Length: 445
Ligand code: ACO
Image 1 (cartoon, rainbow, N blue to C red):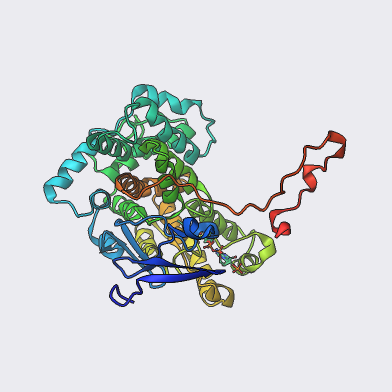
Image 2 (cartoon, protein in one colour; image 1 turned 135 degrees about the vertical axis):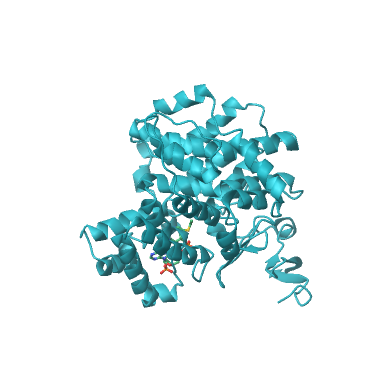
């Protein structure tokens, strides 16, 4: 339905009350019912766990059609960006809304390269973490800690200062990511080399040592750059919504992005890329078979899910997964075969012809094939989600900036439907019921 044909209002009847709620239409003709006056006019709220039906903002950054499997950044199809663009160019696109002119891109890249080092005192920060500590925890802490080094960065800082904070974040995240890995290995931290481009520099800081340079292979750099492009934004996903939520309290950019990293870490979100490889390895090691694993994934009681499959919005093949599946073949042709790709394709084949997955419209998502490429590039498993975070950084920053400039922005503060006890009087100890016997929320419905 296009804008002209769309109804102007949606009528809601609640008991003997009737109200007309305005209908909004997005540029891709997506319909939304504006319920901002609902509670003040009817006393009722909406109930939408997981915000499955709730638009939390208007945004110009990314368009996603989950039914058709379409993803575009600022109108540009992901397939074209994946083929023709670079990560820094995509970062500019997300931040500014337009592809950069040649001089704009050159000066943006130069600006980033001038901020890649971290304060010498900040390098010591990493040494307090246990060597086996997960790098996502270290990165979340480190990005939050940037606020202590740049205490002047506030929500209401000037536009120029906010831009500088964005550049610092983009520039220092690769350094921070690689230090979290070097700390784990017990190797010296490598300084960035500003003659390298953004993606080559990350690989240098991860894999070079003071006694041996890392020969940066352009094929590997291109593959990693592709991964970063594909992860750069994905509208109001869990971590991005987290970034916006923290921003809504007028917290600064570093604090908001640090929270986004924590959200991304979870296995139902970005942490799925690590879980996918662990799943594939357990099949390769003979701990289970693809068929048995799929039976478990279908059983509600097992608590097992086919990691890298299913998506809140995509009810079709995730276009990023399609690009990555092809990239897997290209990268492995260079780096050597990996039996995990065969296992992944076997699982996909079973899922796409299995009624359980077909009925629920469960397809591979971005995490299904990305881990195989990371592994081929030599990136260790618990760094996979860190690379996802590195890729998602421009999206988080762009969404933070957009929230900052949105005249409709309000502190995010959902309502709830209270299902607990009604008012009751304080009980003496001998008359109390142990909290261990408290019924689960579901049992009270
Ligand atoms: N394996 C098995 N069953 C699944 C899977 C899966 N991967 N994903 C969803 N289902 C089932 C659910 O059990 C549910 O079944 P039911 O209707 O019989 O109860 C149905 O499909 C719908 O799933 P929901 O969990 O309600 O869907 P939701 O939109 O809330 O969750 C999510 C989406 C979290 C991504 C889910 O598909 C999942 O857990 N996938 C595995 C983890 C994963 O790959 N996460 C990465 C997502 S992409 C990203 O965040 C970068």
